[in-house]
Image (cartoon, rainbow, N blue to C red; front, side):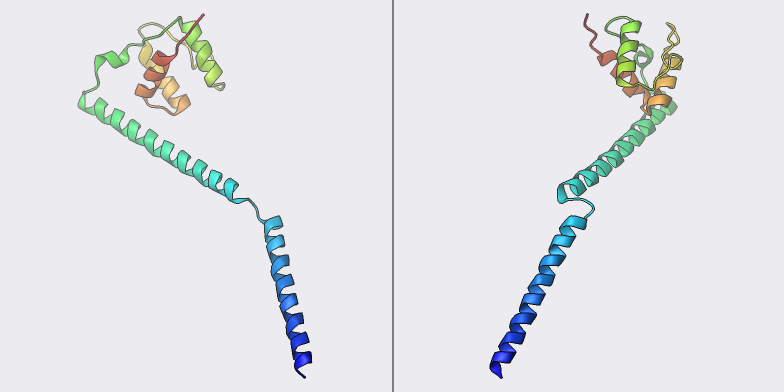
Length: 139
């Protein structure tokens, strides 16, 4: 009688182990993403959220500066390294969705250019000014 019980226990144990193995294989094959992909996706979402918070804080700070009048007059000046055509080419290279109208520039009308670029790129005025002034145009 013990032999039959041992045989049944062995069969149950083998069936259980087979079921666990099949479950693990099915889980690996049917899992939507591996651990690395899931971590990368979480990091992308966190980076995007961080960028949005950072952008909103910068916009709020710029708005506060404008209201209190503490923005310096130097912020209105456009400083470029190279000609406007060179800078415009670099902007188009970095931001393909910018149009000719977005990039139209007349000396003395810098604030209009800044406003268009702020709207189109989702950046603050300080970021736009810094970005343009930091372009290193080499010929």
